Length: 245
Image 1: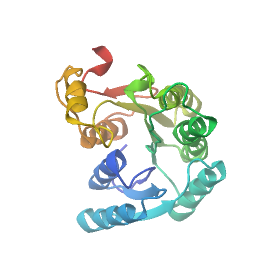
Image 2: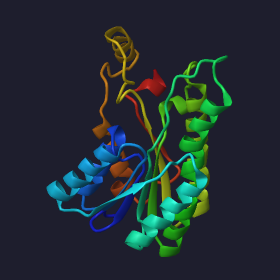
Image 3: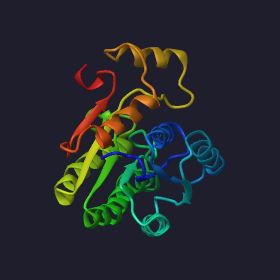
């Protein structure tokens, strides 16, 4: 698929990895549906950059992805606005430290609702529309920790492991018209508040001995969208080698 003139919906587009993905898609010629929850100001700045720097159309859509009805309304609003969606990037995510023994139902649900349930219902609505239109690409931004979980982030890691299962299931359900693939970022953006020692430890545990960047994830997403139409159900690790360490 070539992105020129296509419509791409990116969830959690206002900041961090989502922002990098949105800019990369715009640079390749896509029109953008930019989803955000609380980061309205950042989303507005991103839309201005997309339109000003690349001359691409960018529309903002606010939704709380923890609410299934809001997810369904988001899908309907984007389809109504653009008529079709050719690319869906399920990027929005909740990431909180949740130690065993300190995790309650609210924090568990917060991770599973946004990180797993929302991508399913959004992919169900958008993916079936893609299938009917005869083409589409879905990219799920997962995490290498979905394969090798962190002890203090169990709900997050479980949600990303579930997303990888969903990725494979959607690839089967939406074939052959729609290709569904996952990117598994590793240390491309460390959590806010990481100190020097923690940062050094992460780098030392990474075979490439450096951190990645959101742009690395964006380039992986571009490959899965434009690089080949013969890839589906795949998991592309962008982790500096952490999975094989």
